[in-house]
Image 1 (cartoon, helix red, strand yellow):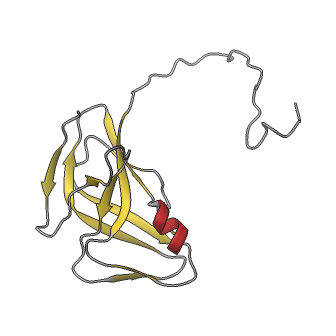
Image 2: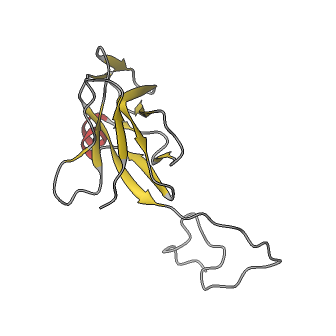
Length: 148
């Protein structure tokens, strides 16, 4: 099991937790002093009340919660959001209200999920051409259209 250092920046912060034994993501909760209303088609930056020290070679990805997306059309506009291993500030979640009604966020509400993942650094080798494949440069809905 990967060990990650975490600091509670606010005594009311709910630290990330897996909701079930096989969950891939940990629930992230809002850590706010008073309820915050997100109007339709607007965003808000919601603090979590904690900071992380991820090991080198790892990132934390913030993702929407499916229940919030389904019931209230609340999502993360930059999903998945990346927290880099060298970031030491408070984890904050950008929420967007795609719905038609205002959405109220309260302290302790589960607003996102976080997945910690290994990442690889790459170096690019510039070449004059790439190897060919059956797909080639087909993309953006190309597969399954019957077009070659």
